[in-house]
Length: 307
Image 1 (cartoon, rainbow, N blue to C red):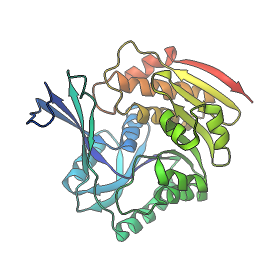
Image 2: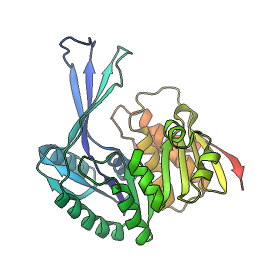
Image 3: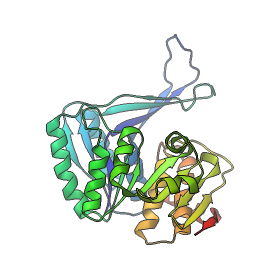
Image 4: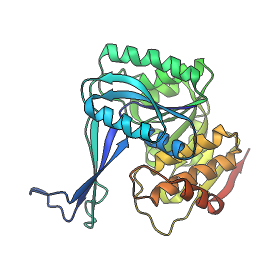
């Protein structure tokens, strides 16, 4: 079982507008709702590809119950702490108006009490012990300590489980102090943290903290480094419908390949293929099994560095 920890789940909404005028009344033409939060997207992608997945998070009010129900429909086991306050809702604007399309509006989410956090940490230890590997992706809700990601990292380290983390800010900095298996960051986050988006240089900066670095650069693809090799992987696409959630699906591809004990080159190939499969799907943050299998043979990989 792969454990996906989604600290701040959401209902992700595609809000469609014919046109949008700031300062005026704007009416949506239609709205589509999806279970969201970064690790939720990871879990959905893994489940679509046939992996046994448990999704763990804080589930708030009627919003949380809807997210859980939609995930369970797709064969995902859902665990976590129940809250009275609703989970957040996040909106992505879709429009022929290029100035607003893919604009995202994100609600803050619920506030976590000390009792909620204690319940979370107790359940965390149990689920990490039952898992093959762990993914932690996304932001934390208000109320959790600044070392929440570090607590997850320490739990994984103590139980000898691989943790693939996708996070930012003080939570990431604190987690790096404890160390963990793998980190997924994009080029902008790399520049903010280390002043460079060169995969080899970033991997050198992280050599005492992580074993595997996944550095993504949008259309330029994935750079995967393990301290000995750097592999570049790219699946060229003629048409992109939406990139929302592609990074999360890429994380899922890496986890999928790691769970199958594949080589670094194959891990990079699966990561890039999963990410690309999300881009050709109109459903927010999701991919289709057929697209992944179609893309794998044509996903390009290149060894850039061999130590």
